[in-house]
Image 1 (tube, rainbow over the protein chains, first blue to last red):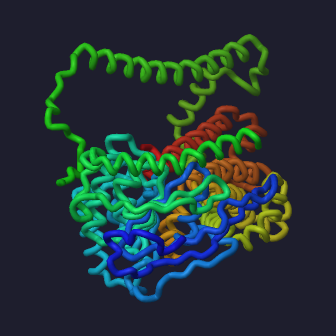
Image 2: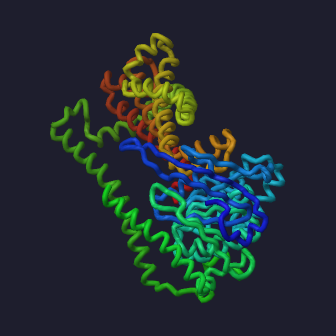
Image 3: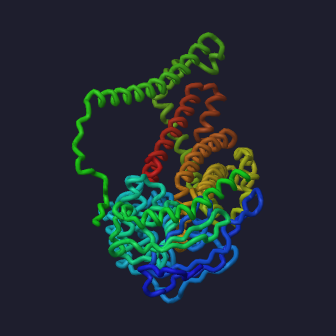
Length: 282
Length: 286
């Protein structure tokens, strides 16, 4: 499953950031029997790539991300970080959550700075990062504002800046745009790809939106319905221009976009059907 | 492509002229709500007073024990004019305050320390939760005799009963506020590997702040209740003693004077704490 066809454009050096082997996760709800959320997931995240994980709801894609982000433990299998780029001043992984995760009692600046408090940085380095990443997401003018004074899209940008400021080896995004309205989502998609172009981040991006995955990712992994398994893997290799110069609207007009979307939908459709029938039978 | 970062103002956005009549209508509807709130807030208490007046004038209440409110107010005004009522209330109020304030402060501190420890460390919670659940329902005034045995009949036992009353309210509300806070904030702490101390001070305690402050307000109300109760049974001074003594010598005006002072104190401190809440947790009003 790992290291298969079509090395993506950005992983010229096949440097590996993270390897997961045969990972499974079992949940034990208070009532009812044990639930196998995902099973036998083997996945390699290459350095500097944007990897999208696509799947029907409830397929365990968020669980996968939570395991990588240290929010959940894996039940069996193994997860290995490559040691080659372990540096001080960076987190292994930083998560952008789907729901609003800004802390309402902290200003924008304090929210971003909070993410740095586990890192060994000097005071001026901290200040510099807060300023730089706030500017990067267009919130420099709002450093002193509180989250309740901002719109939903702006709050999500604060969460993104907070994750970016920790300069994580892996930036984990759990449907970060799902809570936004359609127009803001398109604007944010192009913002995200611009950001990644500038920061050269390695990203694992969970979504259930096929078009979003194609717009943003270099490689797309489709997960099956519960218990989540990796079902297929596809590379996005038709995107014109360098990374960071994606126009989400123009991209949709390219024929390959439609073809890939159709392929991904075919992969997903069975799974969505399975998930539905599983729900009915249970 | 160049990305526009704030797509808020569209290029065609122009100053739209809002119909003055529409504005007037919204203002008028808001005014009506405010007026109704004030009228109802005054009308009901006045109605209650009127019923009281009627009941004692027509002999349903025994007039020598519960005189009509007009007589009570007249008597209180006389007491204020000749200075006897004000002097007595100032003296006894000051005595009560010297018991209330230290008891309240110690109770808040104790409740915060135990409540936060129970909220954060599950071992502390497993150890203390059953004990607190078992002792909380006991009326605090019922253990006052034990406190007299331990602390004597002086101010210390009254301060102790206030401490206990405040402690439970603050401790329980603090723990609840921490445990039942939205999970997302703690997950931010975990996801960004925050150092313990930062997680406690910047995430866990602020999350619980609305609940903590609600506990402090409830604690203050409880403190007044148990202090007056304790002063009823064991004191030669204080507002509780003053009210009880006034009742025993049938000085009804003085009794109501004491009640009104306690009620006013309760209202004012509650307002003060609410104002503090607004200042400390501006996000909860948004």
